[in-house]
Image (cartoon, rainbow, N blue to C red):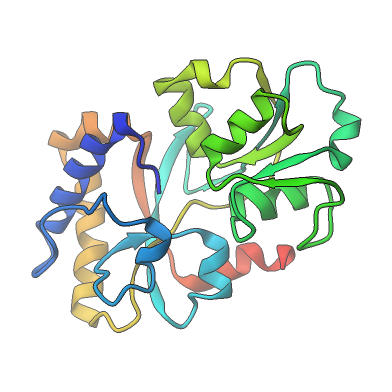
Length: 240
């Protein structure tokens, strides 16, 4: 879900370390498959999902291993708030009826969080919406003036501040979305109990591996929090 060129090597290294502790796991990540399309692919062994599709369409079809504890704004947590962004000097009071750039209508960070931040009624935005297909495209739409406001996944925002701060020039964070768990790591629902336990144990072990310290720092990850789908349902209940 975070396929930035400057992070792929780190994701590969983390995955290989985790997969080494799971018998029969694929040896490498696949970068040629869209993450969203992987969720219901019968070949999927492990993937990372979005919290909203998890509780709305994937509930009976996948199992949640957990989520990463991430370092954002000087704090470590397995929960975060999306950032609501606009151009510098924007009239904040007008944004609730401004033109919105949204990556997709099932995105917890990009759409549901935007609606919640401005107390809009799910699933509608009261003004023009440009469906962008990605957080990067939403950022560009606001920077260029084609849209007025967007809700951006906080980890994406954190990565860009480090990797490509020029893409954020002219923008400012004007509000925050609801507090929600970070993106879930998922397995197929039919995963055996032994394989499920092996994945969860191996993620925990990787967080303690000194050889991965630089890798985890690059990914802004400081831990792994075991969670179940019920944790996401409880956290998102007020948004549904």
